[in-house]
Image (cartoon, rainbow, N blue to C red):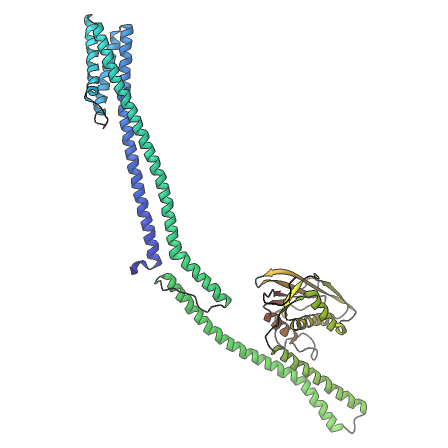
Length: 473
């Protein structure tokens, strides 16, 4: 049965079977219509016989009342028509006894006898009674046959209605079966592939589960797995290239950042070695101070690198957001000039799942950058709220300053290592880079945007961590 393993053959077979059954239902419906038509034709013949016979009896009564020979002649004509209709009715399978079958002809004969008696003026009461009795008998036969024909038509109509209802239910059942077959053969395997792809996207698995069905779904799963394998190979190659580029960039940045203070230290040391005895004490102290400043600058660069290269293990706890912000501001109290106003809009009950020391480093870096971006009087606004992101429910924290802002062409680069807009010697270019890495370790996202009224708005979203210690608000 390999021919029925492909989806195309299964769908074709399923719809062919449904089509064949539909044709059978249509043909059966046509047969039912034909049978109903035959019953109506029989009813018409019986009705014609019955109507002709009733007209004959009516004209007979008119003759007996008014003694008009024309009425009797017309009755004979109607009776003859009834007899012809009765001959057609006898071909219909109806229960008619021999006595009933002869009653119509006897009635016509009695009408002829009455006509002869009326024309010869020899009509007797016996002829009148005989005509009445045979006519009544024939009329009762007509009534019974007409009633039976109507009952047969009603029964045919009921059978037809029942058949239509059965046909509708059968069609619905066939449609449901076809839908189930399509779902079982097509939709369910595709949904399984969709579920597997979702797991691949989440990083839970590296391949799509493909069952050995021998159909197009298996071929699709195999093609997806081949594509994923190729993407993994290319991604690994790109990752190696990216690591080499990042390493080169970092080494170049480290060399550049350390070269300046080391050059200054070297120059100051050479001056001291060559002119130690000739330099005044004030100049000597100035050179030694410069050496100390450059050593501290080098230490800050190395410290930032060590922060970046530190352990990626986080000790996540649930902490009050407002307390974390206030603690970070307390650490920055000497770096916050009085000319800058600070506003905080954070719910006192709001909590966040973070590694407190790491996250304080994030807050300190961002707030310090905001302070450095304001040349004169200005303001810094800190806001936080709970909302849902694709990364999950969590806390969004926003820090906005009224500084000079960041040009749009360099805004995407502010999180790159060793990138800084500050003057030479004022920054290492690692603060926001380390900030970005810490936020990423928490599973969050961070971004910056220009404010239309001037300044920069930096926001980050930290998703809830179900493994965080402490109570959540």
